[in-house]
Image 1 (cartoon, rainbow, N blue to C red):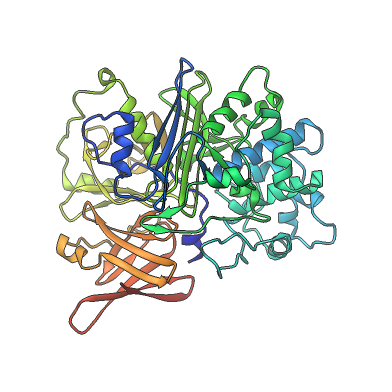
Image 2: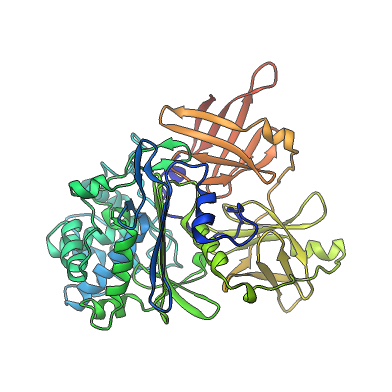
Length: 549
């Protein structure tokens, strides 16, 4: 279960309409209230508009047993937004002359630590841009406590993992998200300065910028303001970090994140030189539809450049973006992992879009012959982890999914272009010299996400009716603290593991469903009467059974 349990953030910009509560455009507070109406916990959204007006919208309480209301000062784990701070620490170390971006990691590790030549040659800059070729997590991450997976992973474990590591190809590689790489970068910077990551964060970033609530270790007052984490309806544990601090250990508030952006980007910022270095685009990051600097992701939306990152730990989700040109800021902090920060941010932008700017009529569907439609079927890779899969569904339509999302029917609008009806998004297919479809590009919310056709086979996906799907819905206990929550949403079976988002699973044969976000599958087991009584997770050579509650 390692890949499913241990993510620190999402890989992809969502295209699916996960949040469909309000058809009409609601006010921000009303829209958020509907999103979180059925979940314990809630959210705080911070907005700074182009005119400089700052507002906070808190929804919900600190926890099911805590009547305290959310506020701008409520504390949350911000997960992988930490990587922005780690990248900024690297930039500041370069400004101070302590390191260069081309320093090899071997220069800052113990001289007697055995490393393969390719691993030794990885640079600090490659760690910050996810181009090192390192895996997402180390091979020796303990699984004894999946509720707090990084707590007991220390320097010795990290060094042991590095000493065994072999790269498939030397760096630089195409950007491939690596929590291990970010953690290693934070660790190496701690070694350079001779102090722990938390102390380094305070000395180099939070104290110069005057941040009060961006910390790793909470004081007594901050503990009282810390929102309790939930995974769906389940109260889960806070995450703690040792050597992995640089990948996701920071806690903060909406007010402090706004303060961070304002003071970081101010003309007289004490980190002006570091921010100028950190924000330079250094590699393509197609899974996010943009580029990456030193830990900070940048993307364009309708011609406007935005910086930011999203994040997630067990029971928390977060999102931060800010405009390079207008200074506008959006921060979303949530203490329930039922919704991704990027999804909520997309809904907020939709709600706030002026009515006059919205198209009154959508694209017009154009007829296309079945044999022509089949030309678009295939698997199109965004990068090594994410792809679009296009197939002909049982109704004879082209259906497309993005890794980690359901299939949605796409409708022909002419000139190799298709549109979705469930959300404002379009796919443009491109042909090669011989007329064969070779690539596609997703167009949504001003973003463009290109993908190239691969030779991978189109997977088998069986369509089930509502009654068949409903038979699987329920809670399945793997351990007292780890549950599978199986639901049906819009004709799609979704499975949520405690501490993780809900992911779609796809029926490949009777009672067996496959994930596409990770190499794993579920087999549902029935009793003598045909009732579903358990599921078995097949992953990494292991079969783990969870009993239906």
